[in-house]
Image (cartoon, rainbow, N blue to C red):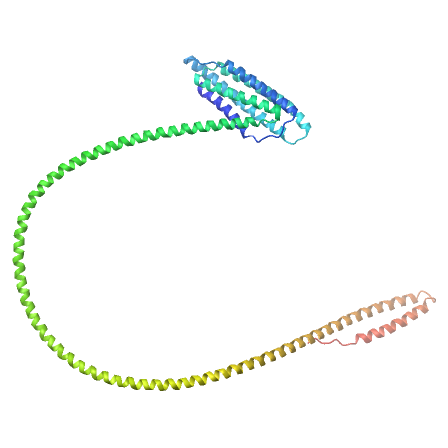
Length: 431
């Protein structure tokens, strides 16, 4: 358990380095922040130096040592967990410090810096005490010494870079280089393990192949012995079968000769019958030839007759074709004339239609104008009637205003007469 806890401690340091390398490049740090960060780095370097001097080389394992190792390992695990939390908090404060917030907030965060720095310092001291009392093996302690020296060198370089340039990019580069070395070493180890596994599998396959080949050789030896026995049996069997086949062949030859003689006599009878049939066929062929010659002569005469008739009909049809071609040419000329005449008539019809549409639009415009005039006249009559009523009311007020009222009344009467005359105009009917 103590060895496992020690390995978890070194892994926590590696994870912290990986987290630092994963951080984005911060902006330039001001002088006050440089002082704070250098103070933290200096404290960490001093603590790592002290840790390097207090780590034991090795202890012998016993029952009591195992118990102590377990207790101290649990304590180291708790301290490492707290160390991780403090480191993440410190990284968060650095990122917030690099943001573009106002100066007031930055000054307020200085207390957090001091608290986190103090907590990291106390946690590192507790980790050093726990590691000092932890009975670890020599290999693990050497690994921890190497990691401590690596971390101390990185912090010294980062402190120098923060002091000179106001950044700590060398930490990320160092961690990346170490990670690359670690990944290369892991790849080599993985390849070696894979090669060992492959050798083991090949050895197993070789043993299996040997067993299979031995079994196959034994089976083939048994098969060879069995085939030798079968060969002896086949030799005896073939000698007996040869004698039997020879006798059977002699009997078959005699039977075949008898069959051939019988078939020869039958073929002779068939030949005589076929010869008589050939004579009959020759006589029939001669008669058919004479008949076909006569029919051929008759057909030749018919061919001559039809050739003459064909020539005459072709000449007649050619004359008809010439006549049709001339008629077609005349019809095409007539069609062109009629087409031109149709186009002229169509243009006349279109012009007439356009004139009718224009006349129709003029009539509609006149009808709309008359209708609008009627509406205006009606509105005017209403206005005049209202003015007349108003003038009658004014007459009742006094004599001085009476004459003026009469004059206005006459004007209204004249206007009314004219409005009535205009109102009698009849509207034009729309077609």
